[in-house]
Length: 345
Image (cartoon, rainbow, N blue to C red):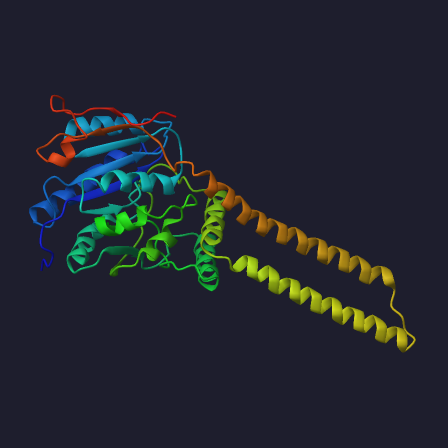
C-alpha cells in the first residue's frame, strides 16, 4: 500500500565501462521493469535510465546514443576518462538527483538481479530512505572469492568500518539520502561504508546473484585488493592504533629477552650473542617497514584529500525531451537529444 504523498520519479543509474556486449540486453530488461512500475502507479512516467560511460574504449557510448534515439528514456553521461566505478556512481547520482525523487544504482552486467527492483520500490513506500540489495548467498563465487569476501567483512567489522555484509552498490536511495551523501567532501570514495553513515530509515532486500550475461569482469584480483585496502583505511584509524599496540608488544618481548640473557649469564650459561642480535634486527626492521607502510597510506590519503581535485569530469551528456520542466533544462526543444559539453579533460 502506498504511504508516501506522491508518486516519485525514479532514476536507474548504471556505471558502464566497456560493456558493449551486454548493455543492450541490460537496457531492454530494465525498460520492461520500469514500464511495469509505471503501469502499477509506483513511479512516474518520466522515470529514466541513466548510463554513466566511465571512459569506455569500445562501442559503449555509441550504443548509449543509439538507445537514446530509439527509445527516448535514456540519459547518457560520458566521463572525460576512466575515473573508476565509485566516482562514476557519484557522477550519476549527482546528475540524477537534479531530476528524480529516488535513485537505484546497479551494475550494467545483469549479475545484480533487477527482478527485485519492484520490491525495493515498495520498501521505499514503507518509509525507507535507503534500501540495500543484499546477496542471500555467495554460492556462485569461487572458493577464493567467497572466503576472501568473508574475511574482508569480518576484518572491516573488527576495525570499526560499518558496512552491510554481502552488499555491493545495488541500492535504492531517496533524493534526501543522496543529497546527504553528496554533501560528504571525501575524495577517497568507498560508498559501501559512506552510505550507512548517512543514517535515515533503511531496509534490506535479499537476492541471488547470477552469472555475468556477457563480457568479462572489470574487477581483477589486484583491483579488488586495492579497493578493500582503500575501504578500510578510508574509514578506520584502527591500523595505526594496532601499530602502537604492536610496538608495546615488541618492547615487552625485548624486555623478556634482556631478562633471559642476564639470567643465563648469572647462572654461568651465556647465550651466543649473534643469534639474538640477528633476530632482533630482522624483527624490528620488519615492524618498522610495516609501520611506515601503514602510516604512509594514511599520509597519502591526506595528500589526496587536501588537493581537492574533482572526483569526475563530465565530457558529454545526452538526454531525452519530454514535458517535464526539469528534464527540459537538459535537452533542446527542437531536437530529440542534445550533446552538452559539460567539461573537457
